[in-house]
Length: 268
Image 1 (tube, rainbow, N blue to C red):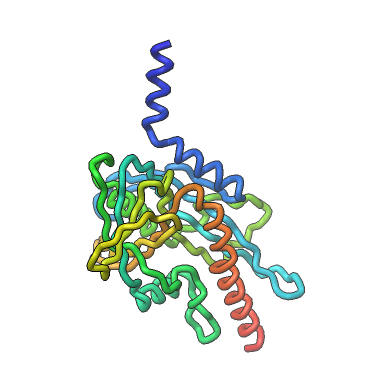
Image 2 (image 1 turned 90 degrees about the horizontal axis):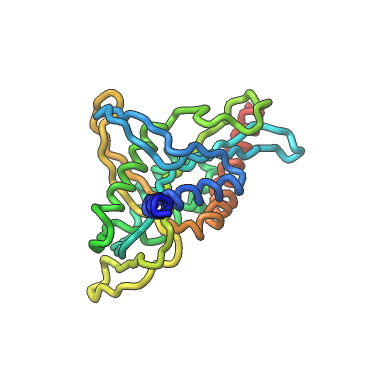
């Protein structure tokens, strides 16, 4: 059965096993999933791909269960099967630019919006530099960042990308909020050091972290843009907890903001 063995080796080398595991996990968690959509970017017009786009609608209701509408959360996910060791250099987050990113993506920012509890506003150090050993072909992290943020910029503002599960709902979601993610097979060989640490102590990373990126690109009008992004990085084992965390923090805060806006509008 030599042919069967060769085919099995293709499956095991491809890294698609991680891809399918993430897809199945998201579906189990109630997310609608689009697998490996292809598109042409605004500048090169070359075909590009993002591994996974997942969406989930969250109901927004008033205190007496009056249905206001939905919040649509979109995840743009790159899956990376790590074959070698990676080291990240951490430093203080740019809090001002992180706050501006949150405001731009979520519409938060009026006096009654508390963005300090949003997960990208957390006062934690973020990864800013990285390096890998020779076991990984090419720069796995640079490729993941480019694929992820290219797709984020391209799909931003595009609605009805994935048909809602409840087809009886004809109302467009009140707000789309997108998050770029990199999901790895494991953090067994992922390490960190601190840029301010003169001794450069190296420790293993065992929790999800944020990767801070200043990303330059050309938009559809061929204008050069430079944007600040935070990409969440985690292992597949950490993904379910991360999804629950996003729902309990960002989703809940944005839902309350939309409720407040509706009350204010009703009084005016």
